[in-house]
Image (cartoon, rainbow, N blue to C red; front, side, top):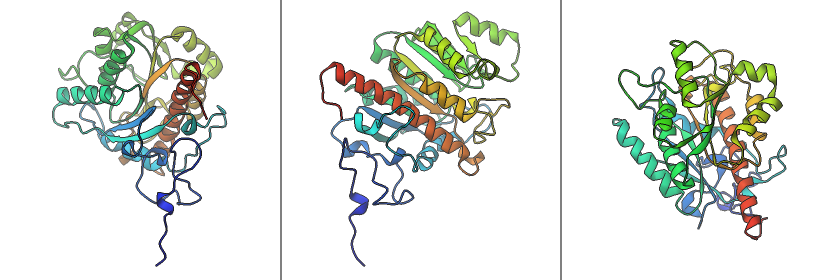
Length: 337
């Protein structure tokens, strides 16, 4: 049998990037996000994509613990150039797959602490983090780490069908429905610049909205996106964010179940994949410091509909982060390919 070195051959131009699909078929080999190099294959990383296989905080359908690997498998078709943004993110920034955090599935408090410490370690040399969940509980420790790295409370754009500002659930303070209430209480969010996007569906009562408003959140519902259009939504979000350090948290259930059936708490009437991607593209130039994509539950996914949507959402987030890295390097006078 003739020997082939093709699986080991990587793109020669720019940073160490995705495996060249003209040499190795996209469906071959171990899955990393967008077929990027592993973190142990490079000397440094500007952006790290990391998985958190944890779903012990869910209140309905479980399975998001398998989400990060499902997104990786669904990302094999992604290519290195983003035409809508006119940028090759893997060339202007060293992007890597940092594997999965090993977190305790039986002890939520311990898991939260582990995620926070892992996030701080991954970003200690200046790398930016894109996290693949996992359920939305993980947003709290990621926000803690992001605020610590920023040295100040951070702005938040939260894309979700739900508010996730409950007080407790069955007496538990840390669940996928409580992370942003805890984040406000801990003072790690800039309450002048926090917004929900895509919310919809029934609530337990009007008090849910009253509490949320008291915390400082603005709301652009899925109906607002539909009626006002993407450009107006982007304008309103950017006015609220300004140039503050920004964290973006995306629950895949912000999409309508037609576009993301594989999730734990689906709600009818959500955003389309196109609407969400265009909103994200409108954030180019914002001071994005980190992001997550959560609540992908592959057991309920068919034809990789949810996984493909999540992988493209993550790609647009990586592109925004890479654009920020490029601007920082240009300001520092570094050569940017």
